[in-house]
Length: 392
Image 1 (spheres, one colour):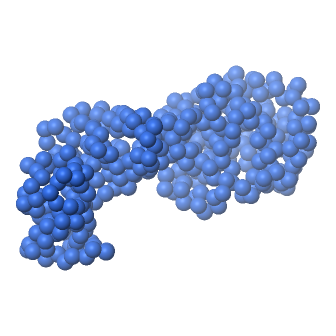
Image 2: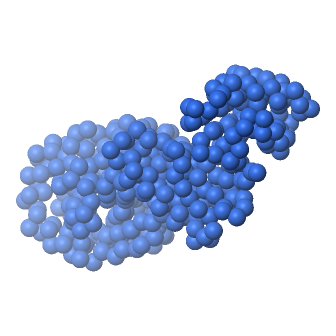
Image 3: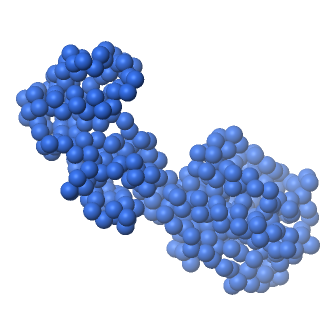
């Protein structure tokens, strides 16, 4: 009469009428890819504004399935539930009581919340909740009713079938990955840029990473750290390409010809020039950085403006209005904090001046760069031609 299934809720795509079907199909494909390689018998359906994972021949092991799909962007809640074709209120009361017996534990108070999509059902949602609640209250479970802060909230959903569930696991939310275009993430080994990549990916932006490597000034362990950060991001994205740019010659040239206080701005512009080419090859629509306004001298409004003009595409800065602690909190949440905390410097850290200019004039920066471009461009071209990439 009943079987264990998994109900899955999705978030704001429900509001996108024109593109809703596209987003739903994208999510269905993502869920199926994650679970059907190891659980080919399981079926995934869309059922009236929900997704349903079901075993046609028995129960679903939700404890094994949820960790595989929990980090799919666009999904908001996972509810281990029981499903029954029964709709008669007398039978539903018996099923609800048996279900509560399995989940009561040490709980002392309860509430029943009902949602029904069949408006022709003879009872209203409140009447269904009252009937089932009375059955549980009058039983030997010893539970008291608390409509405001219950220990257990029993959910009853009457759809094509009837579902009962209590607990839910929160998902990542956001938009389905890859449905909002593509961006090139300038990825260092610090705390900020992986968080920026995660936040853009959560809004549906497919990301490819680009890392600027400067041996022998930067060790291979620094590169390994960035690879590990990229792998951790694939927990959410599924896959990711990481471009590794040999940047030593560019840095040495700029260090020789640029005043130290302006060096960071010119290094960042050189990175943007290279990222422009990668973006063109990847057919990306934006660049993504981990800048946070005012966090360091190179992230003042004037400095950001001086860097921006090197970009051929919009530069997305999802951390721009977050403070450091907020960024660290997200890094801990997405498990990049410990990786970023490894003591291996990136190229920007080693070449930064003690007193960098914090209010550069963008026009002056552009004019100086134009005078150097005959010598700088061949170095940029060589760096681009010798890029390595890793599919993670």
